[in-house]
Amino acid sequence: MILVNNRDRVSWQMGMTVTDLLKKMRYSYSLITVSVNGEVIPHEDFESHMVPDEADVTIFHLAHGG
Image 1 (spheres, rainbow, N blue to C red):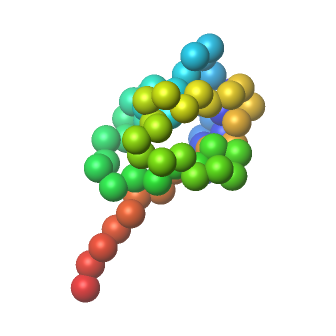
Image 2: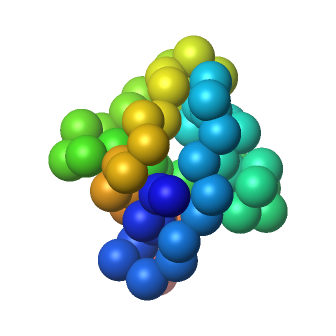
């Protein structure tokens, strides 16, 4: 099980990447930041960075305005 944003529990799958998790959560925002166990994952590493079982993941959308 993966804990996302301290509230959502998501089933873990062997070989799961950040991209896989985002698809599973149906997140498709272009400006998104992800940290796995306190480590911020660069956007270019989303497809290769593995999410371990029991991970604590934080996902947030970057917003702008004026």
